[in-house]
Structures are given as C-alpha cells and as structure tokens.
Image 1 (cartoon, rainbow, N blue to C red):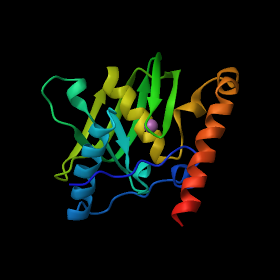
Image 2 (spheres, rainbow, N blue to C red):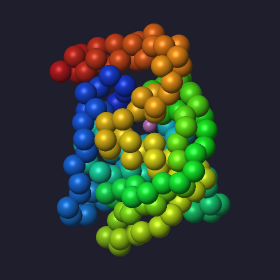
Image 3 (tube, rainbow, N blue to C red):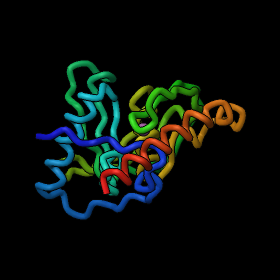
Image 4 (cartoon, protein in one colour):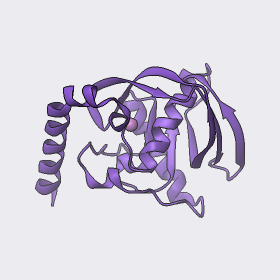
Length: 176
Ligand code: NI
C-alpha cells in the first residue's frame, strides 16, 4: 500500500476524459487500495483516479460515512444512467483545497458500475452516496464541482482558483 499524490485544479490531467477499464487486473486492484488509503489519509469521502494522475474510470467512496460499519468501496466504470429530483448540498474537493460551495445536483441517481471483483451492479442511490458519486463521476469527465456553481459564486472564488492552478503548474514544472 502506498500514499499517492493528489493533483490539483489547474493540472491538465484533471480536464481529460478518463478511459474505461477493460480488465480488472492486479494493477487496478492495487491502485484502488492505494486510492482508499490516500483518501482516508486526506480525510476525504471520495476520490477519482484522475486525482492521482491516472486517467481511468475508477473512483473510491468512503461508504462507511453513509452506511455505518461499511468499508470504502471501489466503483469501476461508473455511469449515471438516469437522475431524479434536485438537492442543494455543500461540496469540497481534495483537488480544490479550501474551497467549499453549494452545488445543485439530482437527488437520486440510477447507476451502473463494476465491483473490484468484476460484478456488475445496477442500482439507484440517494443521499450522500448519490452526491459523492456524482461528484466523482464528474472527475472522470474532466468536470469540477466549481464548474457547476453560478457565475456570481465562481467570480467570488476566481482568485482562489487562480492561486491553486498557479501553485499546481509551478509544482509540475519543478518536478519535470
Ligand atoms: Ni473532487
């Protein structure tokens, strides 16, 4: 197990469309468990593979926060097929540190995904799990929660986003 580096807003990888996973091999399983460890160390409740610089359709969610006693779960190739209702909830993101904003999203979602054991799940979710999954599935499409807030709200955090992106680009160039 290893802690992975979480890349930040402004990193071009986070704007890419993540590739579907064709085979759930050991590499994917190791990545999933590393991502769970990384998410927990960062005190997050969800993490998408692009956030650890892997542009593939894998997300992990700490479902223990949603249904007590359950361990964090990996969702492979998650897709939102349908949605119902509307709900305002405050969101944050490990790739957009110190920014929290209210986001409007559907309340219930119909999703399909594969488990780490390759089982296909087809179900509806609501509540916090529906919220976190939608946020993470957005990451697989290169979308941030701050792309889903009003223009007025986005103006208010413009400087903060610029600062995060500037620091991230500086970090990339220093690493190169
Ligand atoms: Ni996020």
